[in-house]
Image (cartoon, rainbow, N blue to C red; front, side, top):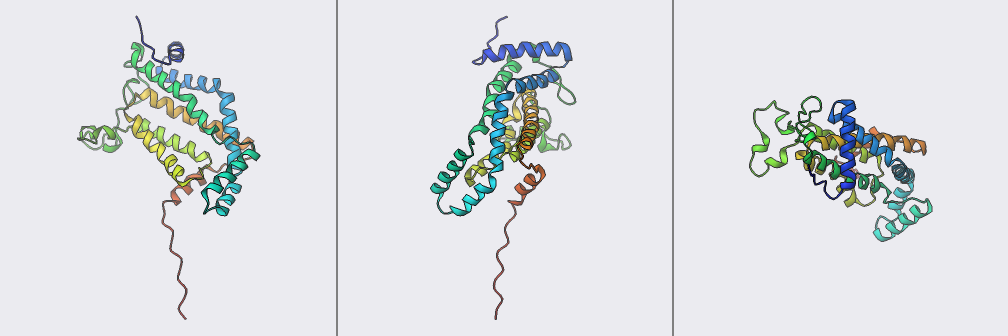
Length: 263
């Protein structure tokens, strides 16, 4: 039987054979996908380590960056120039944080192809409510996971955007937690965009195969663990719960300054 493995055939075909081999050992295609994720992480471990080490260095110089923001708060061009000089002096690559995401893009599309074109993955169950890894998560947040007697996807126009199951939510949370470990961008617009990315990806992946969403969530979890360990090794104080709390504080309105008492 001929199979069109797509553009990333050099990754897709070996990945399928590895998944099928692991299924023969573990007896579950979902566990095989989780195991392949670990193997991919090990394969790109040196590159990811360098990337996370650079992000740890960026986190370490955050006080200096905040000082520059205060100094050049009215001159964005000078702020960017001073920030780049700081990165150059500390030997920090500001775009290194993109590598962990760029690495998994071909893996993501290869796994997507495996789930769609191979007969073995059809009707392959995981655990719990996931009865078919090649189909979307059947649960829906917007009907409280079945507690409300209606199908949110049946609504006109917006129905297709409401197909958000438990696993897409887990994926979005793990992606958001990973972003809390990274130093925030200096530009407010970039901060807003990065803050919205987990929400956008949650809705985008809502209708994707459950196996793909499980892979992404597990990959995020492994990345958070790896990044946390590397940052601690580089002497960076990582207070994840404080970072999460601070992200909620930004939504609170600042109280106006109290007026001067009348004489």
